[in-house]
Amino acid sequence: MPASAPPALVAYVGNADSSDIHVLRISPGDGAMHVLEKVPFPGMVAAGGSLPMAVSPDRRFLYVALRGEPLVVAAFRVEPESGRLTHLGNAPLADSMAYISMDRSGRFLFGASYGGNKVAVNAVGADGAVGAVLQVMPTAPNAHAILADPANRHVLVTSLGGDLVHQLAFDPVTGRLAANDPPFVRLPARTGPRHLAFHPDNGHAYLLGELDGSVTVFGYDAEQGRLERQQSVTIMPEGFAGRAWGADVHLDPAGAFLYASERTSSTLSVFRVGPRDGTLVRMQCIPTETQPRSFAIDPTGRHLLVAGQLSNCLTHYAIAPDTGQLTERSRIPVGASPDWVEIIALP
Image (cartoon, rainbow, N blue to C red):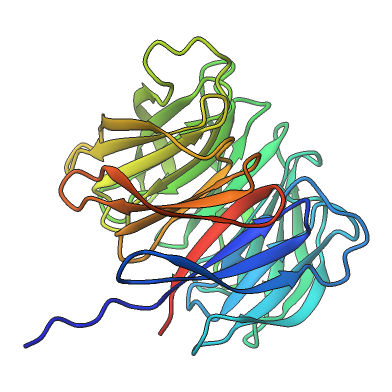
């Protein structure tokens, strides 16, 4: 039997200062990136500091939040043949959201407001349109990320200013959130909890610390929705003396490797994930785009794209399947101040 052809890959890059989304096709052969279209944010009056994005679980819709004016989220249909975007409409958000994500069913959109110290839930229709705000919930200072666990029964919320992670129960029928018991887990002072990633199957979660340049490994009790600290590692380059400014963290789809970006040193770190205990061992730390606020890994685990918020470019790396290490393949200019990247495989 001949090997099946690799899936067609499309990347979406949110550019805060040019207020648009670049849609790029990634060649499965040489990894070259080609711009398919540049989509302006519809209805924007004033740009914000970033353009957070989320893809629906079925890859049919892309959601982009505006942190400027008006405070809305734009819903786009992803055209299945090409990956191009069709605007479905805008819906009000409860505040300026630093992060948006979907529950695992695609029926609810979560938002975390850094300045508003809150999280919120919006309904999402079967047609992909975002509906009314269903719930607003206060958090400790500077909510930075919100993410449903793989079972869609609990939700974690980071508080950068409170140095804690909220542990919430989630009702997937009503979309409502409620404090778990205990309601949060604390981190050491000046950790600055920012972004999170769940391992697909080994019962661990990984937290990026913005202020101390760390990744904390947690054991995760999926039944209770509770975290237990197990390890902390640095993402800072060896011998680097500057101020830490962690940005983003992701696992490859198999959960074999973890990647983290750091903005002061403009580096990407690669860690091997222990298959049983989930602990991390660093394999590589390389210079990358200037101020790498966001990056993404494709669903095949073969490609990593990182955006430079100050370089206004996107670099494509091939991921070595045995070590997880990165090799640069191509580079392309995008919009002004790119700060969010999502990748999908077309059906």
